Length: 119
Image (tube, rainbow, N blue to C red; front, side, top):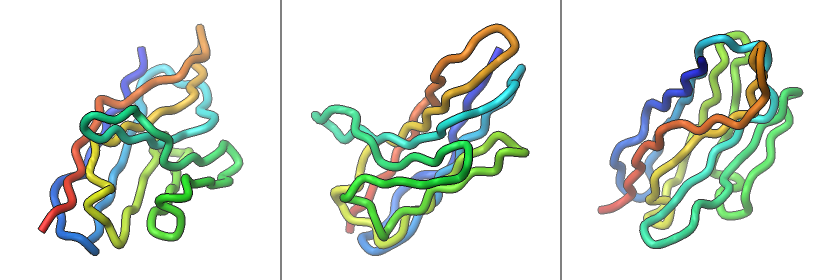
């Protein structure tokens, strides 16, 4: 069984920084793409950033230059450093990973974590 647990988040003023982390544990053989999504109130869940197995990162235009995704494959973790935060970044953030176990391959989601940017 695989667990995928998020940590970090919280509240910050505009222009501030926050860091999110997501750790996978359990019977994991390999993790391919790892991603972050977010969902603001009344809106659909949207893509934020992705990092491939090889470490190549890509970002939505709205966060490019402000957010940095990284991974530690030895620890099965993915992180999101968020700088110069804007109130429009307020949302619940979800991590997602393409995980291979001894019996299957599927996308797992974290439980979601709140990020609030306000004065």
